[in-house]
Length: 440
Image (cartoon, rainbow, N blue to C red; front, side, top):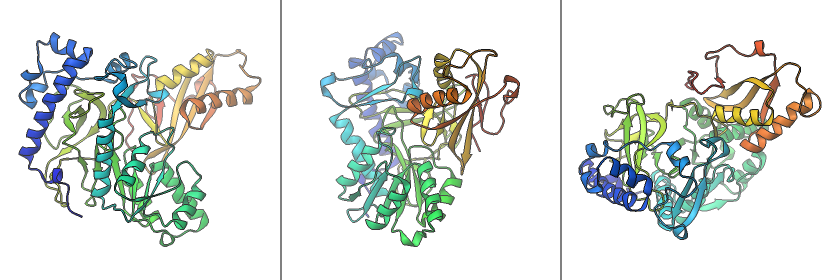
């Protein structure tokens, strides 16, 4: 399959294109978004003063709190009548009670779809393929783009979405699906179901498996490739921009090719905010280059990665990022659902003020969080909210499930039986300032 023209631009041409589009973004932000105009005015900085990428570093970072503080439409650069799609962050990704609301114009939706088409074509998906998209669309609205992009390249969509693993596998066989797109957790569930049913990979027709939106661990990739008998590729996106679509792997599996024509990336030291050398690990910072409805300048993603501009065996000149290594904050993901421990703690405390302390334990397999367990300690001699102990645990469990869209296990323990402070396997402690590490 011939390469997209953007894939073969020289590094010089890519940087020139980015600088031109950066000027457009800064002007759009300055003249249409009060938040950015006030920032630039306070710095005595006008869009035309940013003549180089180094000039951009004078500009402060944008954070999740900035986005939440302007809920719901304070960062939109166009009138609401020009917005055709709204995207709202999950309940556990709120900041000080507010969700993050992103708006997309018709142009933005088209750009997102075009990026997803590019990622399909990068993996040689064509109009001869049958694509099975197995996501929970309510929990991951970005999955719609998998469908739209597949239709746009002429591929056939197999009916699936949120049906059970058994039915997914039946559809895979009956419709001869060649592409499976899903989360790592559900892919592992499909693999386990295949093993129980003694279904061999040779009975399927899969050509590739696409995993998102969470990072794809090598341990997970190896296990899934063995189970499905097909190569497994990772995708990258940011919920505050487009997810997925910003980056994706090619057949060389040599990192995720970055959509440099649409997003400007920086890699910084998370502690100092200063740029790091190419090839050095750091936090990913992104600026949109063509977004109309929701331009974002220097957004700190919290994702830690490495930037690569060396040639890729596939022939594409676009730079690549390494798979996300970890987070700079305490956000975690369980079965593809992101959450912040302190927000879950606040929700539980609002339900039962007698909760004295808690721990979250993420049980992992093949490098991903598959099950969440909550260990709770209550103040002694306080009556349960709902009947006895068993009813109380079920009462809390149902509240958490409704909030997260995720089943959890809740255990009541004595306070002195809680894990001690510090890292114990995959224990995430309740306080936001407690050090921890999500790496394997």
